[in-house]
Image (tube, rainbow, N blue to C red; front, side, top):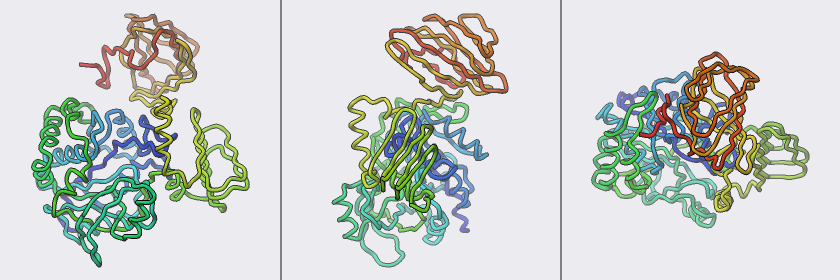
Length: 475
């Protein structure tokens, strides 16, 4: 292995919302943090593959601030503790995200290069990426996008147009196209000078910052401010939200690669799938003798080539071929497999109808555990809440609601006003409106309780935090 590969710092982009795999993937728990294909999550798969490449530098992980605890938990599952987790306070596209990662990488090593790696793709053969880096001697002057031969006119992929060359050469980049329609994708395949955009990039850190200073000075100014004014907190580094929100929302493709003459495209064959639609998930999942993928509580008869998944309820399918059926406790998707790439149009319709199911799951992960909304109505809501061992909720109060808590499993220390007591299964407590309260679990087992809310407004933003171990108290 060439010595310069030891200066490569991997950067994992894990801030996407993944709505094309709705209803499993939603902004509160997007596809990269789920086991969509195989036992590991796509994010964990990316970490494992980067480790397989033999990169020695700890990765930089760029993710949404709401997903920090998912990142920490999934790193722990892999026994990986060495990573720089960067909390993005807002989604500003890949330009600011990659630039910010470069600024942090430069602080670690001014002579470094960064390898940008997506967290939501399935990449099996990373050896071809390492081989390409070594063979082409990519180093401190190389701006390279990795492309994959476009074999089908898929509308869910991004494309890169390149100058036609023969052989295994670095090619000039002409343009980037994001997810074309069917007619345009067919023309790309016919022309033969378009590759699929893998989302993998190789940049020299210092030179990347210098070029963006010339091309996007506003982005560099605000990104530097976001880093300089950011704060380290427990497991992550929080970028300054005010500064970061001022960066232009632009992709690295349009901010940099289309504008410079020395950006190159390198074709690789890494056994890749962007897992960007349910048809893609079907393609890279294990199928039975009839070409069906069946997951969960599923019964299927006289059907072929279908993807059928249930996260609980019995889902029975009879006499239907080439379909997608995904059943969850609060939403069901039924679609032709050929229409899977058009799911975004259905999502838009549901968003226009203010369907809350497009945003969040019924079960919500929090740093201390999770909660699930069981039922709601006019001025009342019922939740099942689980607090993990060693965790505690914030000391808080509500302006518009009162709450009743009933412990159903485990035990916890419950504070209401200034009184704290130990509560176990079958114990209950009433929390008046405006009363400060908290539940803590210093014990060895999870505590589970039912919360009944009653009041004129029941939104999550009616929480006033006075103390919080996770840093969620407003300044």
